[in-house]
Length: 143
Image (cartoon, rainbow, N blue to C red):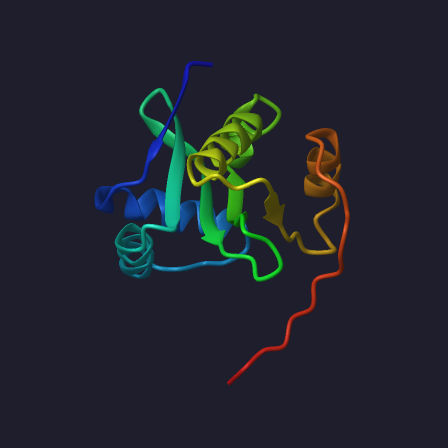
């Protein structure tokens, strides 16, 4: 499979909405367009897409986070999703390489992510890619 990883553009909102729905977060194309615009306006944030044969089949969104205890920042993978028809074909690996390149561009020494407890396949993938479980993630919803 010939794969291109590129920066998301406003015209990609429909693809982004579809991928977010695959991840379990159904949103409209209009909402996805707003989120893409937000990421594009923030120099610490980036959305990159994996495209094969003219079709977007994956995305990775990152955000550089300054650290208080260190001089260097971390790069947080905010979202990573590969469409069902692109899984086990190297798309996830390519997206992680793109996220790592973005981290290095910002002189980050660490790539972080959180993954829902129910995503066993994703956890196996992250383990295989060299990620380690180093902390617990806590969430408190604010209304």
